[in-house]
Amino acid sequence: RLWLSYSERSALAKNPLACRILQLMGEKKSNLCVALDVPNWSELVRLVNLIGSDAVVVKTHYDYIKDWKPSCQDELTKLAAAHNFIVLEDRKLGDIGNTIMGQFETLTSWADGLTMHSICGGDSLKAVREAKVDSRPHGVFVVAELSSQGNLISAPYTKKTTELAKEFEDVVAGLVAQNPLLENEPGFVQLTPGVSLKAGGDNLGQKYVTPSDAVLARGGDLIVVGRAITRSINPKETARQIRQELWSAYERRIAEGQ
Ligand code: UP6
Figure 1: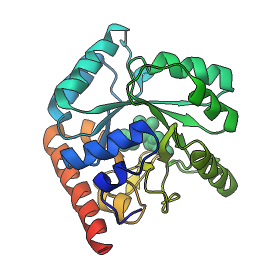
Figure 2: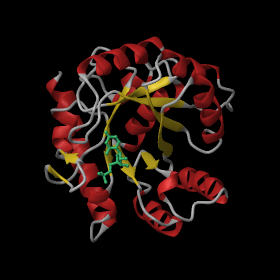
Figure 3: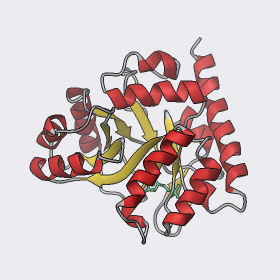
């Protein structure tokens, strides 16, 4: 998996959103997913206009934004079209099938993809499969590993989550992971958060690796970078620099496989 190009892999994806993401990564020559965890909608719009063209995916936590209102959904869709990015709402759903189904139907009216936990087991993915959504490409990223220190995910949980992803490959775009868990499954996208210009962490348990380690050591495909960009003095310049580092690491990975 790691040695194939994103474009080659897009043809192997079973989930339409994974296919679209891999295709767009190849087209835009970017594997940057920017996490816009900012308190105000106006700040999100400002950052999207600065960084949107460098990112393949913009990841939101809509409930982080204090003045989020329904009209933001349409505005975000327009921004996504203007800058050609995909919207991933990092809602990390984790509930019984019926609840997940309703949440998935509601949130995909504006978000292309959603993150979810596998804690409730296979039927919560069956609910995603059976949800009634529009014809745009949708899918979920399932949390198999977390970046935070002391998180409660165990190795068997990660393994079982990986198996569920394969079982529900039509709706699962990929895993949120810190390691290449699906190395032999090129159609999945590994979403890897916990990335900053320098390794380290914050004071609330987040742990960071560098952009090149995220791609080369951790096997990440689509790399989530938040505060390293949003809180930098020059977000546009920092986004460009990180995008460049991420793409060079990806090119090195491809070259090493040949
Ligand atoms: N995120 C993680 N680690 C995970 C899963 N998700 O950090 O294991 C999410 C956070 C945040 C972003 O919810 O939105 O990725 C990371 O932000 P940061 O780069 O500012 O730390």
